[in-house]
Length: 133
Image (cartoon, rainbow, N blue to C red; front, side, top):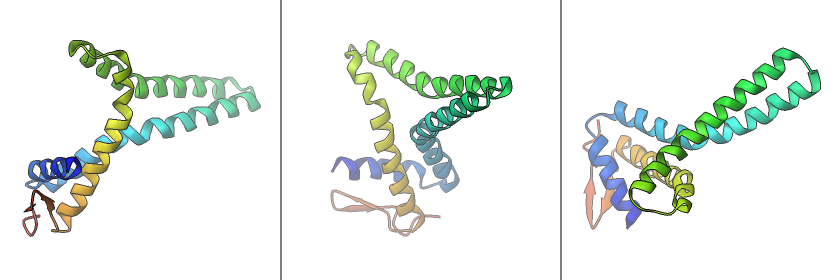
């Protein structure tokens, strides 16, 4: 029911502008997927720098590491600031990646349902079916 409720909210908010919907989904998914890819990229950069011992490879590994820390750290810092204002313990901050991943999946599923004209159903009502586009 929670999935369906959030799906309804996503479809209602994005049905008038499918281009905006695609951009929003890409943004949320990139917050989830990009850090994982960047960790792998950083590991590869350090492995190459270690093998080659070239200064340019080492510099690339340092910059890749900095970008990865930024990509992972900024959302967590922002979430911790919000959690602190809400009086939540620090452990809640670590739910950020999981919550973002779930919301990204809900948005992606809703977008597909919107663009195919199937809509989403919540409490027996269908939203955005045959209204997409």
